Image (tube, rainbow, N blue to C red; front, side, top):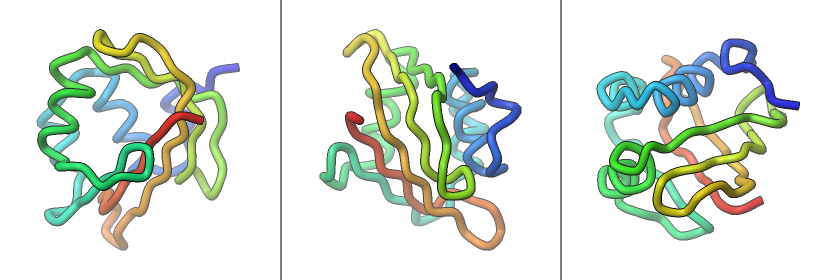
Length: 108
């Protein structure tokens, strides 16, 4: 069963998912810490290139099936125009001021 975005526990993760699904690059970038990093399938990636390719230029969309670790770990169905839909795991690190400093994703 899908968890509605508005019901996700962690405010930063909730904003992250909402920005992805709204294709709102400005809101997405605003919730990242200035030195934010990310990894895909265990490999660190260039954040700006990755989000453009995997989210914003390819209509990325997250449907969250499960959350754990206080809402900072998700199992979700992620789809975009490049890869179609896949079951993915997402882990987030959030700063004291509520910004995402790192996220990691990969196939679940």
